[in-house]
Image (tube, rainbow, N blue to C red):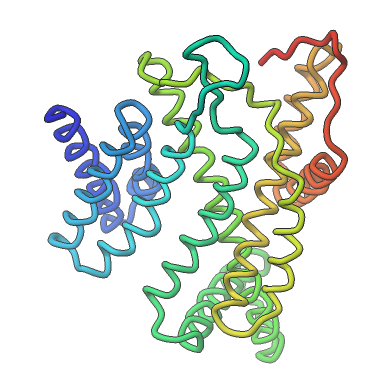
Length: 318
């Protein structure tokens, strides 16, 4: 117990340190900053969710004392709690029905992926609420960021060129409305990466309690389609509820895109030319980015709606 407590403290301090290096404003600092949740996920998976909670609390307290209470709270809701929560879900298990004594049925990957998207959207809106006094201030800040990004892009495409002011305002407004969705997509993909990377590390160390899952077989519950429809309706609401709805739409679309990717891996198993097909797919993802992600999202939606059927003789492999 004492050793687990110490490991949690060390992991929390490491996570807080990775957050703190962002002040140096270098590319390496940004990379380390993005990896801040990994120590918490590692100790929560490799030791226990209680050790993960110790790490989350330690990192939060360290940033509150070293930086500011607001910085600590932002770390808690955007980094520490999402990391702990997903690790906690990943290790949920119950006795398998009709199985061997002691056999466990682990938390389904599809539900874990769905929770990852919801967690990303909730963390996003909590950070927005923490850092913005009101919705008008939030919108103003997002518009200024969108305008600055657009001007940088314009300068890179056409040096010295400028759009009319009314066009700049109109495009900046559209970008600002889409910003929560983009952040939802990004945060969902990052959370999935954190969970996968930490689980691989813990699995290689021999401390992962559950066997390594069959990732291509991931299927989210069909009722999540109703969740996406509800998020679209909520996105039409004014104020922070609408911001949350837009962020949730983006997060769920990222989850469906990942399911679409898993479905392609699953359906191509045992088929000739599978490796070149998958390599070409990933190259296409890197080159086209948003277009390919949209196609994967639609494929994931169809896979969720129609379900996936595997031939009885086909044995699942990685």
